[in-house]
Image (tube, rainbow, N blue to C red; front, side, top):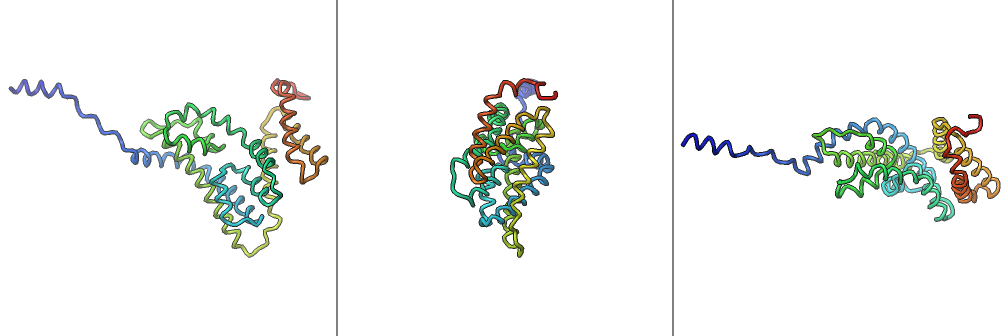
Length: 257
């Protein structure tokens, strides 16, 4: 009888541990995701506060900055849209500018198709929040085996959105209460795009595409004036880049190279 009981016990497989609940997987991924986003918080703080102050200087209500931060969630484009909200209504110009600025996000999405495959309900949010910083973090990220991968991506996306919208709200509400004249602070947007251009210039080996963009914008400014140069400049840049695409894709042909 004892031997049969031992044999019966040997045939019974040990019970496997229960899979962690959805809540446990979500909370378990938060510390790891938060740690990854910490270095970005300072950058979001500076840009978000600047954006909030900038919208206040344009006369927009304090809630406009966090609302655009959440609904648009594309830093460079938000500066442009905020400026355009105070100018003559030009939907075509807004569409072209935002498309040109954020066209790179399409390639981010293509690169992340495999990483995000199987994310389920989180997929739409992950696609929506795929900005430069989120892509730079998630694309090469190796998630530990004991941490839920998709919850990690979702937390990184959500934290970056919270940093950006939160600091934009602080900047706009504080600036609205400041007893100082904010006129002239719109240099923030000009400085932002100058820095972006200079950063691209210093990090590229071939300057021809940058020169095409700069030249087309300058000629359009001379031809159409400050109020009407934007759309012609964008169309000219696209046309010239398509026209000289083969030459631009050919390495080592830059003048003086």
